[in-house]
Image 1 (cartoon, rainbow, N blue to C red):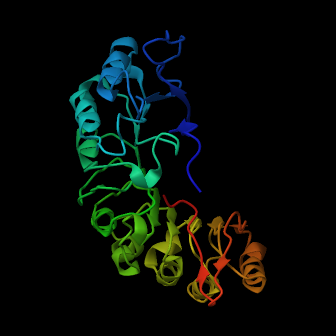
Image 2 (cartoon, rainbow, N blue to C red):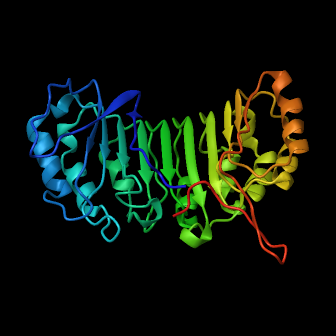
Length: 318
Protein backbone atom coordinates (compact mmCIF):
# COMPACT_ATOMS: atom_id res chain seq x y z
CA UNK A 1 0.00 0.00 0.00
CA UNK A 2 1.14 3.52 -0.71
CA UNK A 3 0.09 6.81 0.87
CA UNK A 4 -2.57 8.32 -1.37
CA UNK A 5 -3.78 11.34 0.57
CA UNK A 6 -2.19 14.44 2.02
CA UNK A 7 -2.87 15.36 5.61
CA UNK A 8 -6.45 16.45 6.03
CA UNK A 9 -5.81 18.03 9.42
CA UNK A 10 -2.98 19.04 11.73
CA UNK A 11 -3.21 20.26 15.31
CA UNK A 12 -6.97 19.96 15.09
CA UNK A 13 -7.13 22.35 12.14
CA UNK A 14 -8.26 21.50 8.59
CA UNK A 15 -5.42 21.40 6.10
CA UNK A 16 -5.30 24.07 3.41
CA UNK A 17 -2.75 24.17 0.60
CA UNK A 18 -1.17 27.55 -0.05
CA UNK A 19 -1.85 28.18 -3.75
CA UNK A 20 0.87 28.25 -6.38
CA UNK A 21 2.16 31.51 -7.89
CA UNK A 22 -0.37 31.38 -10.72
CA UNK A 23 -3.32 31.54 -8.31
CA UNK A 24 -4.44 34.25 -5.92
CA UNK A 25 -5.02 32.89 -2.41
CA UNK A 26 -8.61 33.09 -1.25
CA UNK A 27 -9.15 34.93 2.04
CA UNK A 28 -8.35 32.54 4.90
CA UNK A 29 -7.87 33.40 8.54
CA UNK A 30 -4.23 32.52 9.29
CA UNK A 31 -5.08 30.72 12.53
CA UNK A 32 -8.10 28.82 11.17
CA UNK A 33 -6.23 26.24 9.05
CA UNK A 34 -3.10 24.14 8.93
CA UNK A 35 -1.14 25.58 6.03
CA UNK A 36 0.57 23.30 3.54
CA UNK A 37 3.42 24.84 1.55
CA UNK A 38 4.63 22.73 -1.32
CA UNK A 39 6.58 22.65 -4.57
CA UNK A 40 6.55 20.16 -7.43
CA UNK A 41 8.86 17.21 -7.04
CA UNK A 42 9.32 16.87 -10.79
CA UNK A 43 10.16 19.83 -13.05
CA UNK A 44 9.36 22.42 -10.40
CA UNK A 45 8.71 25.94 -11.65
CA UNK A 46 9.09 27.26 -8.10
CA UNK A 47 11.29 25.69 -5.46
CA UNK A 48 10.08 25.16 -1.90
CA UNK A 49 12.03 28.00 -0.33
CA UNK A 50 10.62 30.46 -2.87
CA UNK A 51 7.11 29.19 -2.18
CA UNK A 52 7.73 29.63 1.54
CA UNK A 53 9.04 33.16 1.03
CA UNK A 54 5.91 33.98 -0.94
CA UNK A 55 3.82 32.47 1.85
CA UNK A 56 5.57 34.59 4.46
CA UNK A 57 4.99 37.71 2.36
CA UNK A 58 1.30 36.91 1.84
CA UNK A 59 0.04 35.47 5.14
CA UNK A 60 0.16 36.99 8.62
CA UNK A 61 2.58 34.41 9.95
CA UNK A 62 2.31 35.70 13.52
CA UNK A 63 -1.09 33.97 13.64
CA UNK A 64 -0.13 30.68 11.96
CA UNK A 65 -0.59 27.76 14.36
CA UNK A 66 0.12 24.75 12.16
CA UNK A 67 2.33 24.33 9.10
CA UNK A 68 3.04 21.34 6.85
CA UNK A 69 6.02 21.33 4.54
CA UNK A 70 4.84 19.38 1.52
CA UNK A 71 6.89 18.22 -1.42
CA UNK A 72 10.18 19.87 -2.23
CA UNK A 73 11.86 19.61 -5.60
CA UNK A 74 13.52 16.22 -6.33
CA UNK A 75 12.61 14.84 -2.88
CA UNK A 76 13.66 11.41 -4.15
CA UNK A 77 17.22 12.73 -4.52
CA UNK A 78 17.40 15.83 -2.29
CA UNK A 79 17.03 16.10 1.47
CA UNK A 80 15.11 18.99 3.09
CA UNK A 81 18.11 20.84 4.51
CA UNK A 82 17.10 24.04 2.71
CA UNK A 83 13.50 23.59 3.94
CA UNK A 84 14.64 23.23 7.56
CA UNK A 85 17.01 26.17 7.22
CA UNK A 86 14.22 28.36 5.85
CA UNK A 87 11.89 27.37 8.66
CA UNK A 88 14.43 27.90 11.41
CA UNK A 89 15.54 31.25 9.94
CA UNK A 90 11.92 32.41 10.07
CA UNK A 91 11.34 31.27 13.67
CA UNK A 92 10.71 34.79 14.97
CA UNK A 93 7.94 35.29 12.41
CA UNK A 94 5.94 32.35 13.83
CA UNK A 95 5.36 33.05 17.54
CA UNK A 96 2.07 31.11 17.53
CA UNK A 97 3.33 28.03 15.70
CA UNK A 98 2.54 24.84 17.62
CA UNK A 99 2.61 22.11 14.96
CA UNK A 100 4.97 21.21 12.12
CA UNK A 101 4.88 18.33 9.66
CA UNK A 102 7.83 17.69 7.35
CA UNK A 103 7.24 15.69 4.17
CA UNK A 104 3.49 15.77 3.54
CA UNK A 105 3.76 13.89 0.24
CA UNK A 106 1.71 11.20 -1.44
CA UNK A 107 2.97 8.32 -3.53
CA UNK A 108 2.47 10.13 -6.82
CA UNK A 109 4.86 12.82 -5.62
CA UNK A 110 7.37 10.54 -3.93
CA UNK A 111 6.93 7.10 -2.38
CA UNK A 112 7.47 7.17 1.37
CA UNK A 113 10.70 5.17 1.30
CA UNK A 114 12.10 7.36 -1.47
CA UNK A 115 11.66 10.58 0.50
CA UNK A 116 15.07 11.83 1.58
CA UNK A 117 15.27 13.22 5.09
CA UNK A 118 17.99 14.61 7.35
CA UNK A 119 18.45 15.65 10.97
CA UNK A 120 15.05 17.11 11.92
CA UNK A 121 15.90 18.12 15.49
CA UNK A 122 16.90 21.69 14.55
CA UNK A 123 13.16 22.30 14.15
CA UNK A 124 12.62 21.44 17.81
CA UNK A 125 15.55 23.61 18.87
CA UNK A 126 14.22 26.54 16.85
CA UNK A 127 10.65 26.21 18.13
CA UNK A 128 10.80 25.50 21.87
CA UNK A 129 7.02 25.93 22.18
CA UNK A 130 6.23 23.42 19.44
CA UNK A 131 3.66 20.85 20.60
CA UNK A 132 3.50 18.58 17.54
CA UNK A 133 6.14 17.34 15.12
CA UNK A 134 5.47 14.94 12.26
CA UNK A 135 7.93 13.53 9.74
CA UNK A 136 7.32 11.34 6.69
CA UNK A 137 10.19 9.41 5.14
CA UNK A 138 13.09 7.56 6.74
CA UNK A 139 15.91 7.64 4.19
CA UNK A 140 18.77 9.60 5.76
CA UNK A 141 16.60 10.55 8.75
CA UNK A 142 18.40 11.48 11.95
CA UNK A 143 17.01 12.29 15.38
CA UNK A 144 19.80 12.61 17.96
CA UNK A 145 18.64 12.54 21.58
CA UNK A 146 17.48 15.90 22.90
CA UNK A 147 15.35 17.61 25.52
CA UNK A 148 12.16 19.47 24.67
CA UNK A 149 9.71 20.59 27.30
CA UNK A 150 6.63 21.38 25.20
CA UNK A 151 6.35 18.58 22.62
CA UNK A 152 3.13 16.61 23.15
CA UNK A 153 2.92 14.63 19.92
CA UNK A 154 5.68 13.03 17.81
CA UNK A 155 4.87 11.08 14.64
CA UNK A 156 7.48 9.50 12.35
CA UNK A 157 6.05 7.70 9.33
CA UNK A 158 8.43 5.49 7.35
CA UNK A 159 8.70 2.31 5.36
CA UNK A 160 11.90 1.67 7.33
CA UNK A 161 12.94 3.55 10.46
CA UNK A 162 16.69 3.54 11.19
CA UNK A 163 17.66 2.07 14.55
CA UNK A 164 19.66 5.21 15.23
CA UNK A 165 16.43 7.22 15.14
CA UNK A 166 14.62 4.77 17.44
CA UNK A 167 17.47 5.07 19.93
CA UNK A 168 17.50 8.85 19.58
CA UNK A 169 13.83 9.10 20.38
CA UNK A 170 14.24 6.68 23.28
CA UNK A 171 17.13 8.70 24.66
CA UNK A 172 15.28 12.02 24.50
CA UNK A 173 13.77 13.76 27.51
CA UNK A 174 10.22 14.63 26.45
CA UNK A 175 8.30 15.22 29.68
CA UNK A 176 5.17 16.61 27.98
CA UNK A 177 4.89 13.93 25.28
CA UNK A 178 1.46 12.28 25.27
CA UNK A 179 1.37 10.69 21.80
CA UNK A 180 4.24 8.78 20.16
CA UNK A 181 3.76 7.10 16.79
CA UNK A 182 6.67 5.29 15.12
CA UNK A 183 6.36 3.38 11.84
CA UNK A 184 9.22 0.90 12.19
CA UNK A 185 9.01 -0.58 8.69
CA UNK A 186 11.20 -3.26 7.13
CA UNK A 187 14.94 -3.89 6.66
CA UNK A 188 14.45 -3.64 2.90
CA UNK A 189 13.78 0.08 3.31
CA UNK A 190 16.23 0.83 6.12
CA UNK A 191 14.29 -0.38 9.16
CA UNK A 192 17.20 -2.02 10.96
CA UNK A 193 16.03 -1.66 14.56
CA UNK A 194 15.43 -4.58 16.91
CA UNK A 195 12.96 -4.92 19.75
CA UNK A 196 15.77 -4.22 22.22
CA UNK A 197 16.17 -0.73 20.74
CA UNK A 198 12.67 0.08 22.02
CA UNK A 199 13.59 -0.58 25.66
CA UNK A 200 14.07 3.08 26.68
CA UNK A 201 10.69 3.96 25.18
CA UNK A 202 8.97 0.99 26.78
CA UNK A 203 10.42 1.81 30.19
CA UNK A 204 8.60 5.16 30.04
CA UNK A 205 11.24 6.76 32.26
CA UNK A 206 11.68 9.81 30.03
CA UNK A 207 8.04 9.89 28.93
CA UNK A 208 6.04 10.42 32.13
CA UNK A 209 2.94 11.74 30.34
CA UNK A 210 2.75 9.21 27.50
CA UNK A 211 -0.83 8.01 26.96
CA UNK A 212 -0.87 6.92 23.30
CA UNK A 213 1.89 4.62 22.03
CA UNK A 214 1.98 3.37 18.44
CA UNK A 215 4.76 1.04 17.33
CA UNK A 216 3.45 -0.08 13.98
CA UNK A 217 3.99 -0.92 10.33
CA UNK A 218 6.67 -3.35 11.46
CA UNK A 219 8.01 -6.56 10.02
CA UNK A 220 9.09 -7.57 13.55
CA UNK A 221 5.64 -6.96 15.05
CA UNK A 222 5.64 -10.25 16.99
CA UNK A 223 8.86 -9.27 18.77
CA UNK A 224 7.47 -5.80 19.44
CA UNK A 225 4.30 -7.28 20.92
CA UNK A 226 6.33 -9.59 23.15
CA UNK A 227 8.41 -6.66 24.40
CA UNK A 228 5.30 -4.56 25.03
CA UNK A 229 3.73 -7.38 27.05
CA UNK A 230 5.97 -6.65 30.03
CA UNK A 231 6.74 -2.98 29.37
CA UNK A 232 6.34 -0.62 32.36
CA UNK A 233 4.95 2.18 30.18
CA UNK A 234 1.85 0.16 29.26
CA UNK A 235 0.24 0.61 32.68
CA UNK A 236 -0.25 4.33 32.04
CA UNK A 237 -1.39 4.08 28.41
CA UNK A 238 -4.88 4.76 27.15
CA UNK A 239 -4.21 3.68 23.55
CA UNK A 240 -1.84 0.96 22.37
CA UNK A 241 -1.38 0.67 18.62
CA UNK A 242 0.46 -2.30 17.12
CA UNK A 243 -1.27 -2.08 13.75
CA UNK A 244 -0.15 -2.17 10.12
CA UNK A 245 2.52 -4.79 10.67
CA UNK A 246 3.20 -8.52 10.43
CA UNK A 247 1.49 -9.52 13.68
CA UNK A 248 0.77 -13.24 13.90
CA UNK A 249 -0.75 -15.50 16.55
CA UNK A 250 2.65 -15.77 18.23
CA UNK A 251 2.85 -12.04 18.92
CA UNK A 252 -0.79 -11.66 19.91
CA UNK A 253 -0.56 -14.60 22.33
CA UNK A 254 2.54 -13.07 23.92
CA UNK A 255 0.72 -9.76 24.29
CA UNK A 256 -2.33 -11.35 25.91
CA UNK A 257 -0.10 -13.48 28.13
CA UNK A 258 1.63 -10.45 29.60
CA UNK A 259 0.34 -7.73 31.87
CA UNK A 260 -3.39 -6.92 31.83
CA UNK A 261 -4.57 -4.61 29.07
CA UNK A 262 -8.08 -4.10 30.37
CA UNK A 263 -7.30 -0.54 31.47
CA UNK A 264 -6.85 0.56 27.86
CA UNK A 265 -9.43 2.61 26.04
CA UNK A 266 -8.30 1.15 22.71
CA UNK A 267 -6.07 -1.57 21.33
CA UNK A 268 -5.43 -1.20 17.60
CA UNK A 269 -4.21 -4.29 15.77
CA UNK A 270 -5.66 -3.61 12.31
CA UNK A 271 -3.79 -5.07 9.32
CA UNK A 272 -2.76 -8.31 11.01
CA UNK A 273 -2.20 -12.00 10.29
CA UNK A 274 -4.16 -13.51 13.18
CA UNK A 275 -6.24 -16.64 13.07
CA UNK A 276 -9.90 -16.52 13.99
CA UNK A 277 -9.33 -18.30 17.35
CA UNK A 278 -6.79 -15.65 18.35
CA UNK A 279 -9.08 -12.85 17.21
CA UNK A 280 -11.86 -14.30 19.35
CA UNK A 281 -9.48 -14.55 22.31
CA UNK A 282 -8.60 -10.87 21.94
CA UNK A 283 -12.26 -9.95 21.84
CA UNK A 284 -13.22 -12.07 24.83
CA UNK A 285 -10.32 -10.79 26.90
CA UNK A 286 -10.76 -7.08 26.27
CA UNK A 287 -14.20 -6.15 25.01
CA UNK A 288 -16.06 -7.12 28.21
CA UNK A 289 -13.80 -4.66 30.05
CA UNK A 290 -14.87 -1.88 27.69
CA UNK A 291 -11.71 -1.82 25.58
CA UNK A 292 -12.27 -0.86 21.95
CA UNK A 293 -10.37 -3.29 19.75
CA UNK A 294 -9.58 -2.62 16.08
CA UNK A 295 -9.17 -5.97 14.35
CA UNK A 296 -9.84 -5.26 10.68
CA UNK A 297 -7.52 -7.43 8.60
CA UNK A 298 -7.57 -4.95 5.74
CA UNK A 299 -5.31 -5.92 2.84
CA UNK A 300 -3.04 -8.14 4.95
CA UNK A 301 -3.02 -11.12 2.60
CA UNK A 302 -0.43 -13.90 2.66
CA UNK A 303 1.44 -15.15 -0.38
CA UNK A 304 2.42 -18.83 -0.24
CA UNK A 305 4.97 -20.45 -2.53
CA UNK A 306 5.02 -24.08 -3.64
CA UNK A 307 7.81 -24.90 -1.19
CA UNK A 308 5.68 -23.74 1.74
CA UNK A 309 7.30 -20.35 2.17
CA UNK A 310 4.76 -17.77 3.33
CA UNK A 311 5.26 -14.07 2.66
CA UNK A 312 3.60 -11.43 4.80
CA UNK A 313 3.83 -7.68 4.34
CA UNK A 314 3.55 -4.46 6.30
CA UNK A 315 0.83 -2.02 5.30
CA UNK A 316 3.19 0.68 3.96
CA UNK A 317 6.54 -0.32 2.49
CA UNK A 318 7.95 1.42 -0.56
